[in-house]
Image (tube, rainbow, N blue to C red; front, side, top):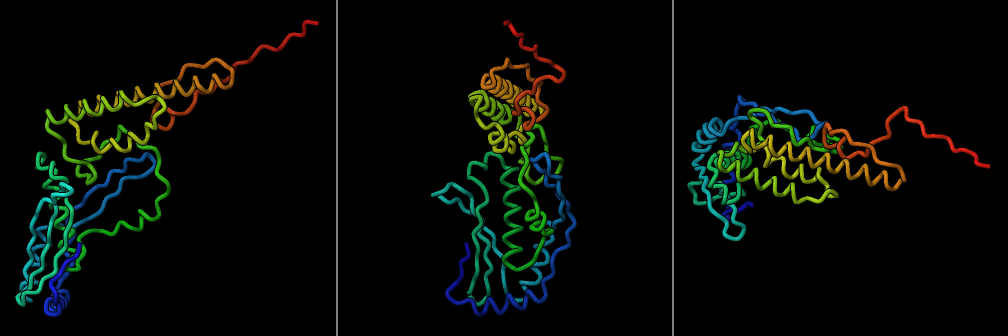
Length: 272
């Protein structure tokens, strides 16, 4: 949310002079976005660090008597941590923005909260002064086709931005049990793909043994759903159901089993 003093003429003029001197920071870092969808390729993009951006912004804005101030607060209504970025001019005029960062409960996972706060500080500051610190990914997103079913066993590579930091062993075990209880309680008719899509980020924050345990339980649930659907299809067609082979992924697991090729049914006999 944007806020400002009653008058912003002086700070606007000073910021315009500063922007004439500002340059985009060099994009020296590379991040990978691991797609949770089977048919989408992973993407990488370059970005500038917060430190490199601060060096440029502070030096240029201070020449125009503009200070940059970033503070945090807890929103009591929503329970979220918010970041306030303030540009204050020597005239007393100011412009600020408010950015929601994460839930207050994330203070129990300092690495996760720190990563979210650094991300928010970089984006809020760069947007406030009018510079760009990362590659533009809008065009690939706009050209993307419809999403494919998720693969619960896919693990983001090192440095992936959409993966939360790995939890400590105790926290990981507790989350593993929570996911297993959710999965066990799901009826066979439940849309498992929707559950997988919603649970994938949580699963990716588990320790590797815990993540494998959840993946195995999910695979077993898929196979049960496949058998149930095959039996239902067989009952509707009036034919006995055939065993369902283990599913290779979510898409094939939920398809009904087909009759084995090469089987012939006996011809009817005429009992006249």
